[in-house]
Length: 120
Image 1 (cartoon, rainbow, N blue to C red):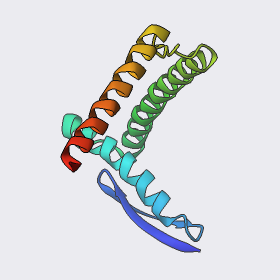
Image 2 (cartoon, helix red, strand yellow):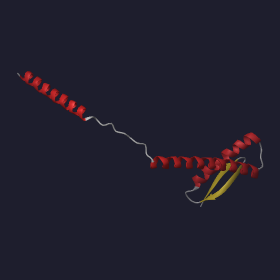
Image 3 (tube, helix red, strand yellow):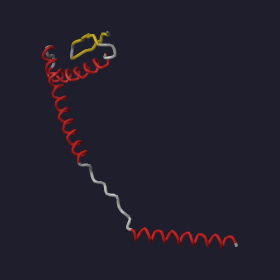
């Protein structure tokens, strides 16, 4: 088991972490410290328990907002999956197909005649 050192606000801490989870603990501590730094910048020196409480509440508010946005996005995704956008593929009218085939045949005929004339 590894020990991780970090600072939150104006105090240093050391906690044990399961092997492989050190980075997660450091990241969580950095998030909490960022909130604590905002509080310290606004309020100045704040007692440790109050600083941790306020920083935790600010993070909890951010998490709640993100959860609401995720739920809204999931509902929107479910609606889109249940009613996918209709994609219409244009259909070429049969008379246009026939006209294109006739033009292609004429072009091939002209190309054949030009080859014959060039070969003479």
